Length: 309
Image 1 (tube, rainbow, N blue to C red):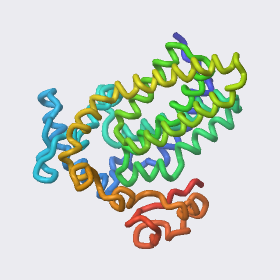
Image 2: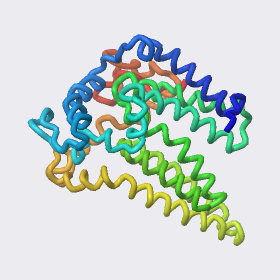
Image 3: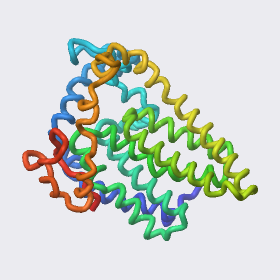
Image 4: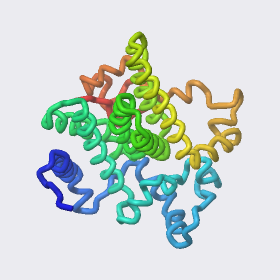
């Protein structure tokens, strides 16, 4: 099969890859690593477990170096190997930070594909996909050791693309692709980001159905689309149950789920929630002191603003 190297998607991916290589030049070509605590601490705690898994082929069930010992899958302390795409990436020797950069590229391509499906021009779709890929939030997740957030968010444009597609054309193929995307996003195990994604697509599906409610012909079509979407969502949850079922069983014994009242304190649970006033940082990154020691906002501390520029 001959590859069309002038295909818009290939050109877009090539340009996005070039931008990533420029931004992360020292990491990709000079072997440097980011020194943030949230980058180094999980890596150091997982070295021995990764070695055991590589040598024996058996998934380690106990993490002895955190809180004098914790279960791995149940406590989400060692679950990267349960993420199905990681199996393929490992076969290609793409691990650690490089796997995150692949997901960053996946983010930009998803934005491009989604915007092209909305009939935007190739150039506009490229700019939109690149802007989402290079959003400071996405890049800082890589730098400060929150790669699971970025990799979970990478599925957002792809899930939106397939959601729009399945509402307009509810086929088994579209249902299967959407289920896989939703399942993989849940497997990447940053539940909060996945929750926001599902809220977004759920709101879109509900709005579309209600908008066409009085049109009988459109209502019937959209009703089939709604059913296909719900089935895809259920299948996606099923794909991710190997991660979440053990966690649900462990919840009563965990620090966050075993307290008085059956969960973490409200102030603790919302300590890093985004205060409405800090939406100013979407446009003025230093509105609350930027980050580090200069930060004076509502969170206990942060290293960066959620600037959208």
